[in-house]
Length: 112
Length: 113
Image (cartoon, rainbow over all chains, first blue to last red; front, top):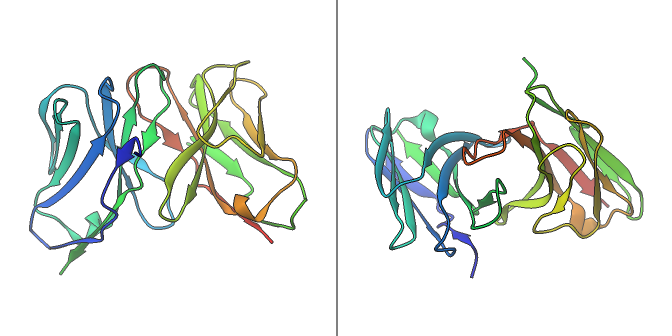
């Protein structure tokens, strides 16, 4: 079982809709969770971090964490064509300090 | 405002050749990382360095060596390149701790023939 699992997509949503990206992780003791965005041919960049159960909102982005279900999600409201990218879920597993483990990423396509 | 700088950006090698990927950061970060990214495989950690003078293996260290030359620089060496090492390599740096924000270089695309 991979430590961090994501559906590779592509996930296609129309402009203005809500995009929902999901991620599950295997290490129940993980405490820190992140979403990175990667445009094609570019390097990843951090868009959200979350450490506690519940929701965390930042502009059009909301990260949701459910530790009991070992599930992290990212919601993007009012999706724009510029949101089209691959979204990488990352976790710091127990006892690994700052070593992030990444999922394979979900490709999001926002259509006009 | 350089951030993390990687060289070279592109390289073609023949099987068995050696090369070193260079990485330097100007953000005074303690931790530095080397990842490789392959289609369908996501980012996989090769080696990391929590601080100057220390290095640790990641998920896929075989065939690679690293050197943390000083706080700024972290190099990745392929001693005898293999086609399986064809990939995009990313160097990253961060402050130690739970923030998890990695700052990535632009990547180095390596092809081994």
